[in-house]
Amino acid sequence: MKIKKLVAAVFSIIMVLSLTACGTSADESNVTPKDQKDGIEIGLSIDSLVIERWSRERDLFVSKASELGAEVNVQNANGEIDEQIKQIEYFIDKNVDVIVIIAIDDLSLKDVCAKAKKAGIKVIAYDRLLRDSDVDLYISMDNEKVGELMAEYIVKAIGTEGTIIQVKGSPTDNNVAMVQEGFEKVLADTDIVVDYAEYSNNWVAENGFTVTSEYLATGKIPDAIMCGNDNLAANAIKALIENRLGGEVCVVGQDADLEACQRIVEGTQYMTVYKPVEKLAKMAAEMAVDLAKGTDIGVSETINDGTNDVPYMKLTPIAVTKDNMDEVITGKYHMRNEIYLNVQ
Image (cartoon, rainbow, N blue to C red):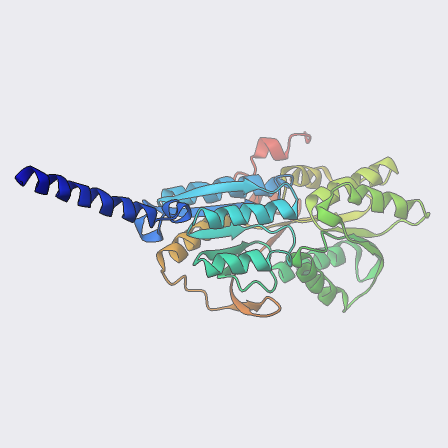
């Protein structure tokens, strides 16, 4: 009788355990609750690594986040918006704590951002504002100031009269509109005429060469060329050199790429806008960790994304010419022997 009772008890326990196991779905077994994670997980989705600065900022962000005890999963969308959406959905499925996005298209990510927030995941728009997405933080430069600096240095170079052309960045990048706003604000007080302007879809650098070449083919020579970034400026200068105008036309850009700094000391590019990206990347990593922990990030300024007012942290850009290259860039952002490589 004792043996029969023991067998029955064991059988009952086995049945209870079996039923409990059947009550857990496959999906539930693969999800790790946030409070059971070993540490903070951050997903970083990058537009592409074609532009020089993104590689540098990726490394700085990952290094700082790691120093703070967070793990970063980096995904490169290679300029494909559908791929970027898939990457963000992948981060959501992994149940990361924070998603940091360098957006390809400022309007195409609002649905997937809403999905992330519904899952309790914080979202940071890095450098480029995500419109209508109600992100938890937008961290960037003062992009209107970037445009103002470009215009101010064109005026400094050519005076308050003249003709210029513009090779703008991608129309899907909200920063381009902000830069243009600042640029036009300065030019409004001058008699400088913008004779031709064109956007560069997906920041394709070769557009700088095409636009400049086509303009020069009309027989006209601009007094200055405003380029959306230094890659576009490089190609505009290539077209100028092919027409024996290298160093004769004021060319301005932004990002302080190494080759742009080389061109500035060589005399073919007049100015670039340096954006302290080391500080930007490290601050973004710190704020991502704070958001993951639920700590107040202390950002009081806001910017309207078209629908919502979102917290806005902005850093101040600096104009760089041959005159202040050593003060601002040399030994801090690029090394002297690299900047002056082609200068005796």
